[in-house]
Figure 1 (cartoon, rainbow, N blue to C red):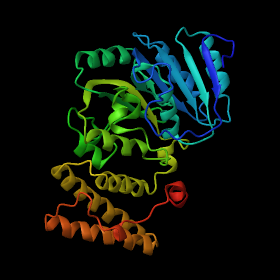
Figure 2: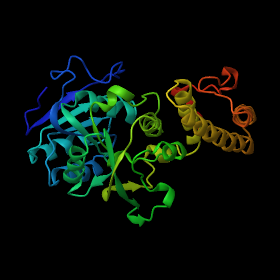
Figure 3: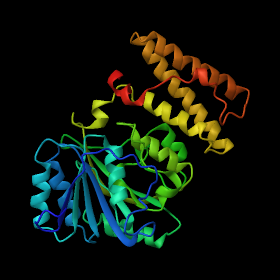
Length: 341
């Protein structure tokens, strides 16, 4: 429903949508989105910081075609902040509110509602350099063989600039190896062609954390990434309201299960399978050892048993794309896992 101010469209959606298909077949544009650019901003209780993010979109040297804000159940003044912004913004703004369901569900909602062929993601606590969209969109039009691109970032923690270690530097082209080791793509740096979701699916809504790691694994094993070799994104970190901070203990447990899922789906070629299982073995060893150190004996032994099997199987060069014994896979109820971390 329209709210009667500026070009802001307000939709209060107090339901959790489970997206069986990446694109909504009932969308007025069906599977043929209009050429142009949608910006998707998920947010939760960031009524102050979202204004800076929105201003950085508004001030771009290339104007996007729509801004989609998905409010994941905020209890602060986010609605009022967006309403005020929209009054002075010529870009169409859509605001959707849902029960708190996590960043994956919020992004998926934005993807489904987007009308245009290209999507840029921006977390509400980050912001962009003013030429970000112009440069990145232009590069994607010039290089149509790429379905996904990302930029370099500048990192700040509590206002202080941080120098990135070499391992955190973003890569170009085939980046699957890099994405296995860590989350190798900054969410706010990304621009994609909407058709990407037809081949790789959407974000895993069961994951409240590490949903980006899970997604980039699925993307990077299939598609090359175009790197825009400029620091066009400003990433803010080090606050206790961030998901990555709240769930920083035990994140490898979620990454382990993302890797297991990737392997058991049979998405990987033999070489990808080998390096994936090698990284899985390393992560299981680290996590299992950590569990023992902190007194979680049963859980630690489960992960170390899987690590031992993986080490033996890799040594014997077994083709294991779907052959991990089910009894060795630690069970994880994703709905409750984060309460245990």
